[in-house]
Amino acid sequence: MKKKTTKKTKTSEVREMRSEYEFAGGVRGKHAARYKEGTNIVVIDPDVAKVFPDSASVNEALRALLPIITRRKRRIAIRRKREA
Image (cartoon, rainbow, N blue to C red; front, side):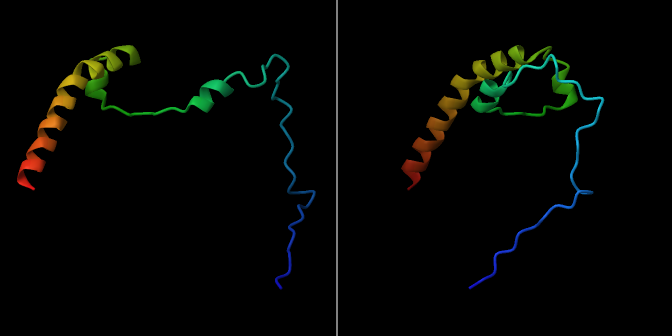
């Protein structure tokens, strides 16, 4: 049998919160729902970012491209079936 080892923290290792942190006006779980949903972060090149002023315009442009991408994927899938 293996021995169970427990690591005890020394009092010098215990970190305490700094005095300058002030949470009196904080709201517990304010962003929890959004965090739970998940997020995709995409970094775009600076030259592309100049064209789009905000995330809504990026999403609009990508949605406009969706039908083209979908058609292309279908065509590729049909070609692969024919070649197989």
